[in-house]
Image 1 (tube, helix red, strand yellow):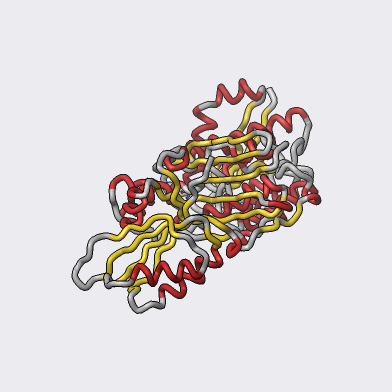
Image 2 (cartoon, protein in one colour):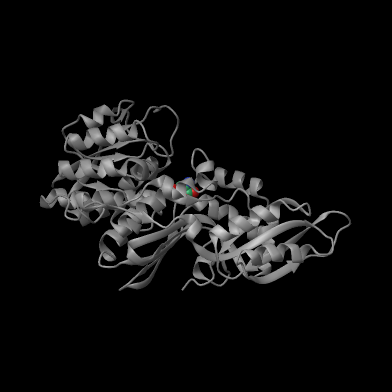
Length: 437
Ligand code: HSE
């Protein structure tokens, strides 16, 4: 029986999952593939820390180049994360004609153009299913299943840690900092948790998703991004009162002339919507294709075995190509790299949506009319107002939701309102999306 040798660079949580899955489902994988996958070498800078899976000493190395330079290894799995030396290792492996599988979203969101072009030039496959949505088949869905569609919209909950935090704040009334610690202990947070809570990890995944959906290069820094670190229990409670739940959403909407509106921010969505009920560390992706209509994908966006499942789907896919002598049957981003355009993004100040504002105002006569006056001057129409009972001399929250308004006008109005002497703290703004299909 044919053997296909694999080298694994990065023996962390996901690497451990891949080793486990290879062993646990060995018979099934061999039967389905008609060939045997052999783990030839595992590289990590640290091979002494105890792992949840044991491998023979002679398979272990601290030198990744023992994998990259081994002519018998056909598939290199990069699970070390980070930019360097991951980028160099991936490029070197491809330059030696090796197939690559990676889960490294930060790397692909930042250096994807260089890496995908190198893969095309070398005629090698690069699999990256695990880079977006963990176990959920997002890459294959966009690359193959929905390839005939204009993707009219994308709404995604793409970070398990942020979703876990928001779920616990909403359902258990816990504070942000307490839940963050719980999430870190569960092991799906990034090494630097600001990547999770400030939407950076979501932006990495969104840049990759959009480049596939629109066949266009996306500059990470051009995607508008806000995280969840400023969401308070108070806003979570008001959201509930208004019939919403707060989610960190990644949004892309295809406008006229191929322009895409794209933004990542905490969003209030109707509590009955499917996306509002994606809880804990789960991820979900809602795509609307012009031919397909809505497609909803849900699952574990992180974690050892769910992510290992996605890594192995790429390994098997590539192994089939190796067995049949086919390479790059479908280009990595579903399009010849030379046909990739640069995405045209709608400037953030031009977007129009509904808004939730929480003003911290001193409870005196005339406050509401002052705030409402400034909103009116800026063409912002108020939909609802909630004001809680007065507490002696302290600021009271005044909550308003609006009809659709222009971001540019909202920013201008809030700047003026926050300068009023009756307003004690910076106004909280959360965008509302309540017209989701
Ligand atoms: N830190 C990420 C998350 C891991 O919480 O979703 C998966 O990319």
